Amino acid sequence: MALHRFLGMDIGVPAPAELAGFFASIGLEGGGDRWGTADLPDQIRIQETRYRQLQAIHLACDDEADLAAIASRLERLGVASRIRAGELRCTQPGHGWEVTVRALARADVAPRMARTHNAPGVRARKNLRAEVVLEKEPRPPRRLGHVVVGSPDPTTTVKFFTDGLGFRTSDIVGGIATFLRCSSDHHNLLVLPGPVPYLNHYAFELDDIDDVGAAAARYLAGQDEDRHVVGLGRHVVGSNVFWYMKDPCGTMFEFFSDMDSIPDDDVWQIGREFAPTDFAKWGPQKPPGEFFIPADIGEIARLRQSEAA
Image (cartoon, rainbow, N blue to C red):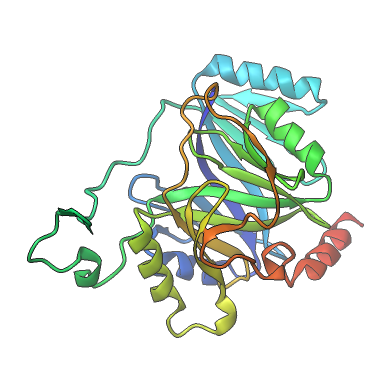
């Protein structure tokens, strides 16, 4: 796979200072309009816009030859691109999402010592309380792992990312929701059908289920009830533990851990029989309607139309 890493995103919101404060509160590092983690600084760039939106995603490939191959595939799709200083830039037709692909060495976040757990017959933690119980604050997110977008033409959108950029398909739900990867993660991008192009959610990876639960509980403490969306649970597709909430600007975000890893494309079998009801192995089995159609989608559509006029 020429593509090997999801580097980050540019996000537009009407209140960038509020979003920056949120990122600081959950333990991201940075300041102003640039945020990330200890391993991956500047994964997120914030811009002020009239409505919340995804503006760009950033990817990594192996070398300059990969950039040239991507440019050639995009040209066959009728998509213009340019390569300069080890970076390819293009724009997703129709939706306006900018994509950058940089030639970078392969890397991952640094491993962190796992918590010690007791299990039947294996009592590894003796005479000690569980680490998560003793920790005064949740561990910070390790990285931004994926984004999910809605598209009024999901088939064409998927074609741009797969046939053009080189994403791989991991699984397909209901014949229309397509999980795509540009790394060994089960998905770095999910394309859903939507009435207009919009950002459905973005997701932070944490170390384990304890981190997901502790970080979500800390964020939700004292918040309005509508900040909670759905969780805690474990997805069927991707297998990851999840908890979904809304940030101060109304965009859904996810804390996740323990996602399927696909280092060998030839071994993985794409699942095509999943139904929309295959949401969780355990935990909430049916997400609320706003999980797929956010409450502000009408306002997003109105403002998009006014910009195009």
